[in-house]
Length: 115
Length: 116
Image (cartoon, rainbow over all chains, first blue to last red; front, side, top):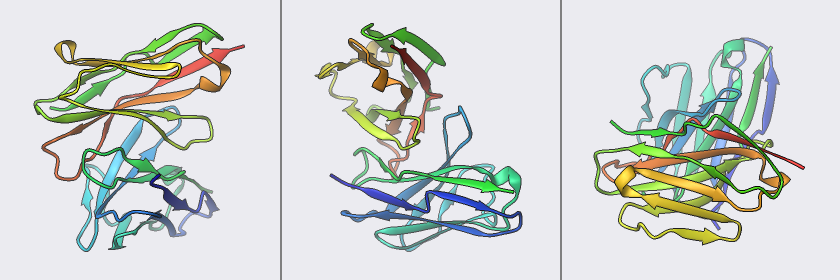
């Protein structure tokens, strides 16, 4: 079945560091990928929709300059948390599907801890 | 506006009990898709089922069954003879047909604890 790979699975770094998270669709092409953020004991909050070859669409309240998204190919989207601070610590998870209406396949998530 | 409500925040049962997780949705679209995902403690999301709005047939997969009722805008999930390995957070989600991206709207999630 379709698989989405997310890397790294865990990051611990100092405040002010920029962190890049990769999301790859391994056996299908994805013109659209999604980035979510999840705080402990809460639901997934959609941050942005990543569109291959064009700008990402950000949800209300999500800072574009803080969370940079690049979707340069049909199998790779990256999320860069720029100048991360402790409040950016969270679980970030990406997803993609082969077609609209089909199940989203999720990466295993990245646990980001900013000291 | 689109919305998914999982009113049960936490449920605790003893192994072998049956348990139903509720999901109520709101949408103005006539075409939409409903999903259930499982999130075990390790964090990954596991796809369980997809239903489109034109298919109200209930489904059974092993110990899992789903009841889709358009009249009440509900898509409930039942685990029969629960096991400790069923302990996880379960999310119900909606994707509207009018969406040109297929983005998911998640419910708040229900934490299921199955005790031995």
